[in-house]
Length: 127
Image (cartoon, rainbow, N blue to C red):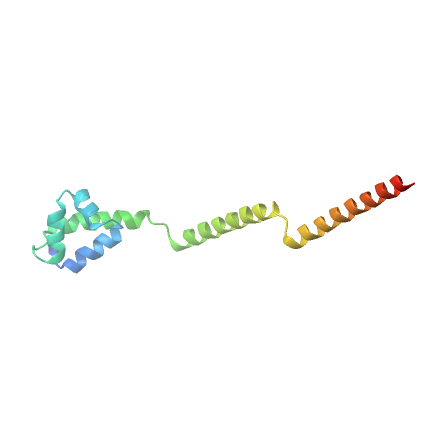
């Protein structure tokens, strides 16, 4: 970016937009551009007029943040991949556990086997 003072916009709303685009808090923005936080607050509430130097620094921060931001297609692919991985982890985790119905069936089979064994032993002892 090249500085051009003819593009000076001293409106606090514009400075707020730049802070939003830079994806930083206003206090962090102040530190990053080398001014104190009180001055930043006063620029934002309109007490002080915003110097072009502050505006230009914020425009540079905002442009840098926007250039590092992934585009929507990349986000969609990343989200889809992450969701697929999460689903696979969830399914693997669920496979470790027995469903209640299957658990009842297994318990019933075990009880039947135990009962059959008890009957066999009691019949063998009666003989």
